[in-house]
Length: 201
Image (cartoon, rainbow, N blue to C red; front, side, top):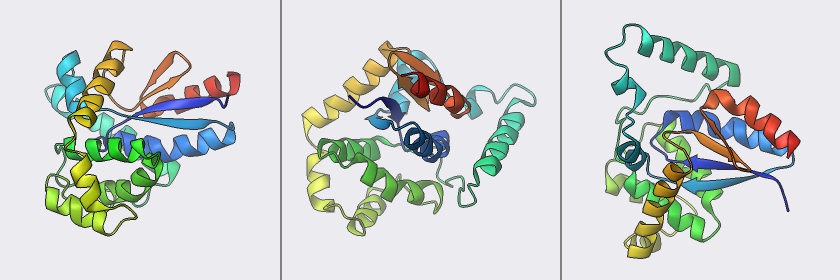
């Protein structure tokens, strides 16, 4: 059985974007697969009492400024010259996550992410507008009408709820979160640790 890193994924997190591409490179170096698990970050926050750092730390002098400095360092180190904060952030990602669930059912989740992620975190698409999302899918290899119908399925919606609750039960409280075996790693800064865990797997 191929060793793998599980990646809890929600399009709404800029740190998920920043972790995704280095994780792909890391997994390739170690001959490992990546398991994408769609979750709803807003639901994780509600279940854990967590909040987005820029809101949670707004009252702590200097903390958000330092977090941005560290993000800029990470961006420079990995050459993310196309990254741009989405002007509509934070946005409700529930539609995107249900679409990702539908793609995962077809084992096309990586293809879906590779298509959509640059629109979110490089081109600033308004992901709060369902018409914008569907117009983007019209330009993709996916059938937008078929995907739009599938995300109305109660079973698909419940699976996303279950994924989110299960992630919290396993100790996750935010994104990006990774699991190698039963060990959890939180934050893009833990990618080196993920690599060491893959090497030892």
